[in-house]
Image 1 (cartoon, rainbow, N blue to C red):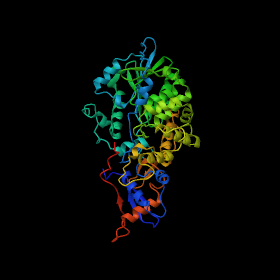
Image 2: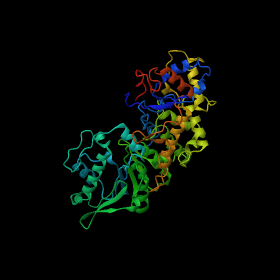
Image 3: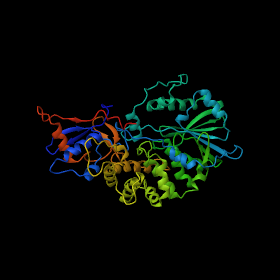
Image 4: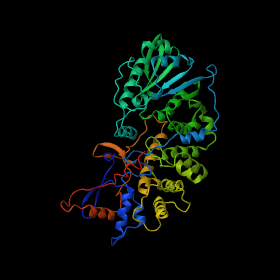
Length: 494
């Protein structure tokens, strides 16, 4: 792991440079030594800094987003929801939304699926659009985590990969599969399967309607459904609006989700739906329209933002906090509902949102109402753990601390960026700014988009001077030194 652990260059007062990737335990030992300096470093100054190159409260040591079971919040909301039934085809039409993870195990599987659907049914098969990694935090994160090798998909007779999830982790594999399915589903071989049914197929943001006309399978572009939104979860709103506006016989829409993001997006738009949207959990069918009736629109908007704040595909979770505790905290205090509801309304964050979410974070870590700043909360916690004096041999788990303010600001920027996209799901081609300066930056060494965990120095400047003095090589005073405790390095990794 040491080869993949992020490092950061620090410049001392004498302009010497060190490569820094120390763990929290090592830092506190250096801090204790710094107490001997004429100009001492206060605990307050220390705890206002990240201290580690990747913030352990919201990231892994290797620099990936910390993750949790992001379905926990959704499961809490639907726990007592009624299990509804799909209406009979004779009463109203149905529209089914599928995605690539619902792709058929085999051609026979696909034939059986469609032949079991009533003729009135409409099926939308939608996939993510795989954009370049310099503009897509999601693609960049997948790339950084690694993926399976490319699998040659050049025909229906190619055996289905044993590891389907691994196969789908490779963007090139998904592109090949999607293109193959589009070409096959629009061929004459599918004539008997499609019959009176209609399929809307999405490939790379382009929408096509596949149906039988005059005994021939046709494929026609649907400009109104084309979109540059990257994620299917977001584009589903465009598809539902299309169904509502152009297919009056469709009264019920069933959505088979791939994760919980789409649940909160659907809930956010639920009050605009004129059709019943049924969320298919596999073992339970949830009427999204009915569920939304229990909440104000402001509350629903806050829940959408909270979902991103506590961990989504391109945002981190807070280690040890999960989804349920933050949701219960939000529901109990109405002032936080107003704050989170404002997230994503603008690409620019205002002070009201930043200070309010900072206070919420302090509550999340069980600090009382008087503590509203995370740096103060960090100082209180370290003093409570070790008293007013730091002692030699002290080891502190920084993953249990709230992130410092500089880290929290970048996290909130990523959250706001994601929620802004979700709140524009009804727009086919919204003007989405670059993720750069929205909690992400370009790693100049490898050219990849990565989370910007914080701006500024990782430790106080005076501590950098201590490290330089500790590590100076008498034979080569200009040598760059690396500070790390290898025994502790993997302690916080997921």
